[in-house]
Image (tube, rainbow over all chains, first blue to last red; front, side, top):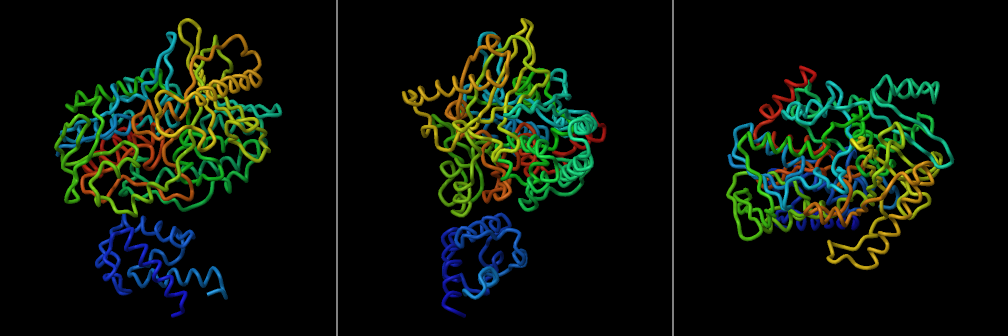
Length: 90
Length: 483
């Protein structure tokens, strides 16, 4: 994990904690978004928008979005996007 | 179940009627002194001017709007329904085209003016048609569960690029029906809002006033009450569940469910803290709005064109179709009303205002510089219309001007935008459901704008509350009978 990966994880966790009023202690990578963090299908739409704003890029319709189950999946999804979108700059 | 509908526009009244028919106790609360102020319009000098409704698509037998009006039991109350309107496009530089509606008429018009383009237009029509089949609220034959409207998909302009440029500009002009710039529109949403206008385009004799009266009459028969002058000041939802609605002056109405058909941006101030998550509130606050309008109302002696709608547009090969007021020349949409017994007709022209050109809020009295600007804008638009429609001078009189500020004043809670939140290709649409149990959203910011959008968002909210099968029963019956 690089320093930039850590920054991405922090940005995701801070945004989700603030926007969904989640306990920061619950934000472990293996946390299931629905079962553990209590987000429902309505919240998932809002979550995509929260992440879009936090990272300044469009996420809807991106491949892999529908497969996200855990907080760790979100981290990996954003890190992959960064690596895919800006090769060599990670 | 006791349901409260907040707002007595077309979506609030539709939701209320369907819920009352499904056997629920229903109260409608309206902030204004009389119901449905926008649909009802206003009168000047013995002429009635519609404001909320002028013409609609899908009014032919079997058309989507006609089927819904029939399902609501109000089709016969509206007066004779016409569905053969035409649009006349006058482009700067002199090119004028007339676009009829209805598949065969449209294709004949295309063959006449743009020979060789029929196949591309047919493909475009078929592509739009298929978008209607995805929801049971749009297609009486669809038996699926309602699914969220996907904002994904293709841009309208990608599909229009297959057409000759003037034709593409005319098709793109229908984006004004929901306040979008053509480059912002997705084909999917355009198909639902503009698509029905290609099938048929018309109006019923009584206009928006008759629609409001018919819905109110059916509501009274169904045992629902409508309270005017009842501005909602709060929705009680402690514990994440709706249990009452509070109104100005200290009134409170206990209830089990609420269909909120007001401006969704108001929800934050109406609900207890924490009822909606910051993510949802921030998303709503950041949702882009449609432009604010400048409206000119006039009376004309006789007809100015055989077409009901007249578009004064910049050059079709110009960089921008909907040039806003202040640009040269601004785009103007004109709706010509039906002739009254004394030979006069109503005439309404719409221009789009640049963002942020109106004072904030609903200031009273109106600031001096606003009034000066409004007066000048009214004269400028009138002069432009006279220049572009020769023969009008001396035959018409401007009777009233209105802006987004007027809308804010007239329709409680409106933000002055022409069509509420923008239904563009980039923005994920707001759905009727919320995190608060028993609270559902309806209105033109949800799903689709316009009379059809209002009916569908109201019906969908009622369907989530009372069961989709119950709410869709009459729509399916009427669809099968092709009213």
